[in-house]
Amino acid sequence: MIPRYSRPEMVSIWEPQTRFRIWFEIEAHAADALADLGVIPKDAAKTIWAKAKDAVFNVERIDEIERETKHDVIAFLTHLAEIVGPEARFVHQGMTSSDVLDTCLNVQFARAADLLIADIDKVLAALKTRAFEHRMTPTIGRSHGIHAEPVTFGLKLAYAYAEFTRARARLVAARKEIATCAISGAVGTFAQIDPRVEAHVAKAMGLEVEPISTQVIPRDRHAMFFATLGVVAASVERLAVEIRHMQRTEVLEAEEFFSEGQKGSSAMPHKRNPVLTENLTGLSRMVRAYVTPALENVVLWHERDISHSSAERMMGPDATVTLDFALNRLAGVVEKLLVYPANMQKNLDRLGGLVHSQRVLIALTQKGASREDAYRMVQRNAMPVWRGEGDFLSLLKKDADVKKYLSDKEIEEQFDLAYHFKHVDTIFRRVFGTT
Image 1 (cartoon, helix red, strand yellow):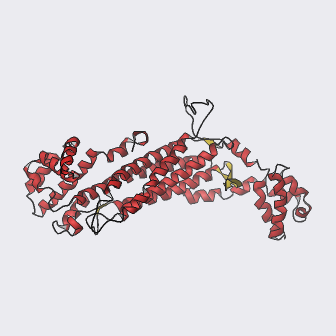
Image 2 (image 1 turned 60 degrees about the vertical axis):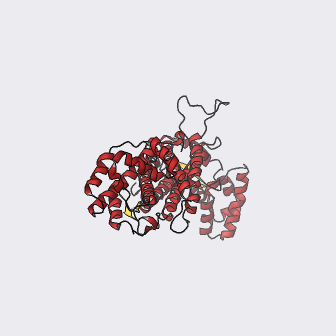
Image 3 (image 1 turned 90 degrees about the vertical axis):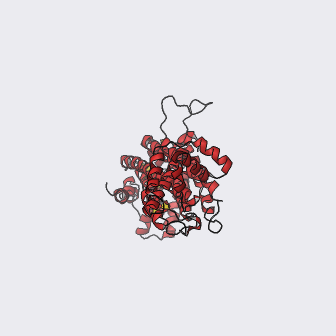
């Protein structure tokens, strides 16, 4: 993670001081449970909390110890002993490093997920506001990048709203799946520590107990979490690419807000570039890039190895910090998006009425023409218009074969733009629950 694409609240989850604080809480809650079970003295558990509850852990000191021990958890426990004193000998009884590391990591993921869910809520709020604002603003729908049939700009935003509603639900589910705790000792058999300790720590840390762990929490949970982040990032890019297309000079149906004093190019003073949505495309690629190593981390040797560890030290912070930044940037883009209905209408009219070709096709078949003949009649009048030779309505009215089935008035009725929007309210009710 780099400061340019980071927000403080998410970054703080991954800071060393936060990590060591969570480690301490896991150890101290475990000590409480061990004391209740009579395994360690109750006074020792109280001392552990009293001496270290408000401590600021010395990150440099822990790093110094780790350079000698080559073991991060031992380095932390050694530093904790310097703070707590003799009672520190009761810390980490029957536990293994992964109990601390994995439980802490899942606490961090759960906290990160909470922020990401709140971020999606911002995106949803912005999309809903703008969708209702442009519910009936006509624009052209495109397939293969080519003009197809009319839609409304509100529908485009409603598509995105529905997608991010699904994204939110997936993230809620991923948070639930990742929020587990394992305090089961070496190879996960609870041989040296009572399962009730795990239950106590899980409750205290806001987690569920891992039903069965080896020495690590199963990484299929983490793979699903990162896969969910990847899908959310894909949704970010999908909307970003739509906006980038709309900002193209030849289209210019909408564009990113351009602030006072902003510069678009070091060489060309006239430029107004879609830099924010291009940035979102790049950030989305980075989030998705972590899905593959997360899947590969599922496969560990026997009860445990640490081939996953180095990857997760980068993946966890980078993916969550980047997606947090991207979602907040996307919400801002939607909130401030400049929309140009006149240009939308201009683009709708560019093909001389060809966007109504399907209505004419259907009308001909309903009047008795075979579908093959109707298609041939419509297409032969459409192709000259495509080449810039006349308008569709006039050519249809001059076509003797078409006139065998449709009067001029009946042909004109097929060019009613409002016809395409008769079910917009129905779609909005499905998406938003109210209109």
